[in-house]
Image (tube, rainbow, N blue to C red; front, top):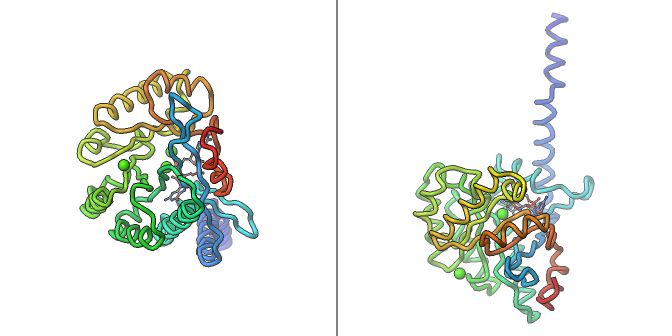
Amino acid sequence: AKEDGRNRLRLYDSGLHQCLLREATLETALRRALTNDELRLVYQPQFDASTPERLVGAEALLRWQDPENGPISPGQFIPVAEKSDLITELGWRVQELLCKDLQRWLAAGFAPPVISFNVSPKTFREGQFAARLHEVMTRYHISPGQLQVEFTEGTLTDRSDIVFQEIQALQKAGVDLAIDDFGTGYSSLENLKRLPLAELKIDKTFVDGLGNNEHDEAIARASLAMAQAFGLRTVAEGVETPSQLAWLQAHGCDRIQGFLLARPLEAEDFQAMLHNPDTA
Ligand code: C2E
Ligand code: CA
Ligand code: CA
Ligand code: CA
């Protein structure tokens, strides 16, 4: 009995338990974050590959400032949110925050480029995404051409009709669609063929190897060729070095996003870039 007790105790203290406990704590904190307005968006500029001083777009990325634990990265809280209904709440909040920022910039006379934002598979499968976005855009007087939705191939694995309907509704409304983290999922060719996409984003994991890893270069080259064949704009994410930039320029990638050119910026710092688009 003593032995059992010790085993149980060991199990209780195991990494798995700690992990579940952390997730439960994070989930509670995230719920509170939604109520207390602890979430905001930052904006990572995207530049024209052939004239990298030209701002051509931006990606909106979620940030969470927890009053006790400081900043918590989306790489940490998005996966936890995705296990519960929280991800859908987050999705609605992102739409709201983005349209609010855009309305402020437009009202102040700035001309922001098209802003992309991320939608998680679960939010997309909810079947309310396009309708909610339309409602939020209307409320803030944002035109659909101002926005682009990024989703991953993982969203499509179950070939859900709802997702397809949502995608068509967004396209019909004039909101562009980008396939995110391209090359990390499955059935890429088929997806490219049947979906009304505007843009393909090459994932950072492949960009990392440009100039030194033949395998990554082959995937990047193939992705660029496929995008070209399907008439899609291409964006490389996570560009950190001049040699990665040079490789992408030489291989006809359209747009560049990465720390080399700009980190994600607070809304006011991004707005300052809109003042003078020639200053990168
Ligand atoms: P993602 O969609 O692939 O976003 C790109 C991530 O790469 C961002 O991390 C960005 O800050 C980072 N990044 C960009 N350039 C560089 C670079 O040159 N070097 C390095 N090391 N990193 C770079 P972030 O903001 O931490 O977001 C991580 C992931 O969290 C995103 O990956 C996305 O999957 C998710 N995420 C972020 N915001 C949202 C959101 O509003 N909604 C949803 N559903 N997911 C989000
Ligand atoms: Ca993205
Ligand atoms: Ca368009
Ligand atoms: Ca990525």
